[in-house]
Amino acid sequence: MKLKYLSPIVFLALIFSCSTDDNNDSNPVNEVEGLLLIKEIVNGNQTIELFNEKGLFETGYNEISIRIKNNTTDTYYENTSLSWIPMMQMPTMQHSCPKSTINKVSGKNTVYSGFIIYQMAGMDSSGWSLTIEYTVDGLEYSVTDTINVLQYENQNVASFMASNNTRYILALIEPKDPSIAINTMKVGLFKMENMMTFPVVEDYTITLDPRMPGMGNHSSPNNTNLTFNSTDNFYYGDLSLTMTGYWKLNLKLMNASDEVLKGEDVTEENEASSLYLELEF
Image (cartoon, rainbow, N blue to C red; front, side):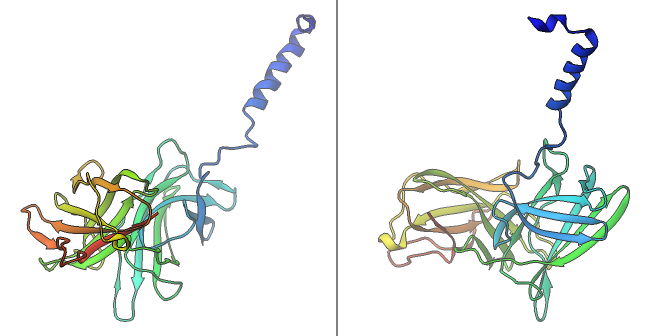
């Protein structure tokens, strides 16, 4: 009740004070909340920060978030364009791997994201490097640094030569958190056009036969084969997991004419396909 006797100037001052507190910039939104820093790459006055959920690179599918810091102002650029070139240096050759374009994350001002699929492990100075090309304030920059790529505990990526003399890269993306249920299975399929180019393979079929080698090699009901989804260029199917443990996901790669390019049926005489991915939970 006493508030009505305050002078108009004091009253306005109180309103202004409350408004300022509500919009206090001293606690800015953390646009990488829930992500862990993988690596910082310093390039003169800028630092490129790389994040994901685990804080590391590993074989298989890696979804990566990126932001670029202005080291002078300690702020992050909101308008930039980025691209990347992962490269594996081997004793007698070098090659890249499947990768996406880099796009700004919806609803965020400073964070960009994309994916890289590493088909083999490699440590600093003896394996993988990452070149990032970017534009800020109308100027183009490029920086390269070595990176660690650790071996994932199970086979979550397969690199293989098919019967049509084409090398393919197949990577497990989902389920990330498998459960005893019918899980959505998502994979990426790419072909090696040359040492640097790995385009998406469209309109193939990947047959699925999950088995538990440690439990009599039994399978599970209600699985469906993986088919291509043109919305995001990945393959989707149903993966039925009836118990926890180690599963071998036996696969066959079929082209658009239903010709088998890689893999075999699982039978009493043949316990596993030569094309498979692994999952354990």
